[in-house]
Image (cartoon, rainbow, N blue to C red; front, side, top):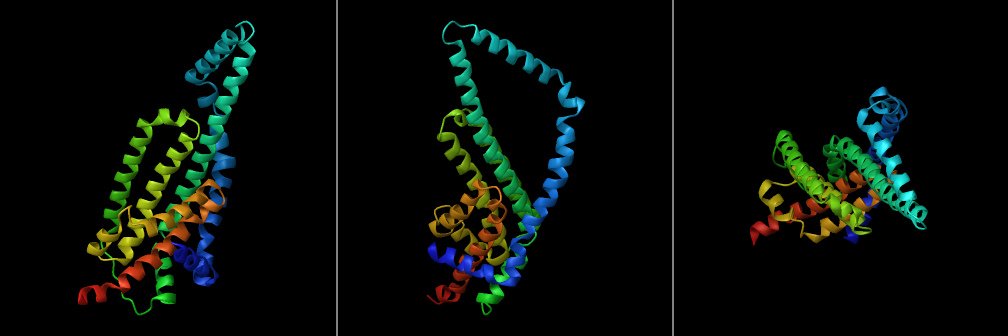
Amino acid sequence: MIDLFWKTLADLKEPAILWRLFIPFGAAIILVSVMGYGLFGVFLMSDFITHNPMVQEFNVWQQQAEQTIGAIPFIGAALLWLIGVVVAVIAGILGILLGSYLILLFAMIITGFMTDSLVKAVHDKHYPHTAYQGHGTISGMLWKMLKFGLLMLLLFLLTIPMLFIPLVNIVWFWVLGFLFFRYTVVLDVGQVILPESMFNEVKALSNWTPTLTLAGFFALSLLPVLSLFAPVLAVIALAHYYFDVLSTMPKQQEI
């Protein structure tokens, strides 16, 4: 695992890899500028939100609840303060996680278009004598990713109550995000480099070397800016691992 980290970081000095590392970052700045300060702001200030009956009813219910709780002798004000703190903490944590995951998802989509070129850059630099062909189709890969993504979404919806348990909510939300991140990157890079039979042998979650390496890079998703670089780093690390595996194939066949 440590070896994969060093190989990945060492590759960042290569021009063919370095400029690709910043493509998701540049694209994110453009997207945030357009959506964050334009479309999203207009949407929040639109009549659809401000005059929405459900929003207005919720505001009325909130005011009534605050008045009812505040009227409780001695402890009313303390309860309102405590509820406000709890809601603020939960909303803050979920907001940070959701925001960083949205940025990470966007970076993953952009990186997906560069997987072939990143793999080729790693191959030409370190494994020029190792031939690779890959397997599968783009449509098949997208279908598998969609099914797994829907499965993770369903699991998230079924476990929403866990998000209100301090610390457990952070760990569980991180695990769900990591499972999706790992599945998509492994599938994307694996289909480019490995034949299907070999890919099926090394794709398991229990294959700890790539799993722990990807977990380390996924941890960058907790930092919104650095999460833009996580998918590119993950692709480079997996490319190294899979080329190392592929290079042993003739020896395995001789045995």
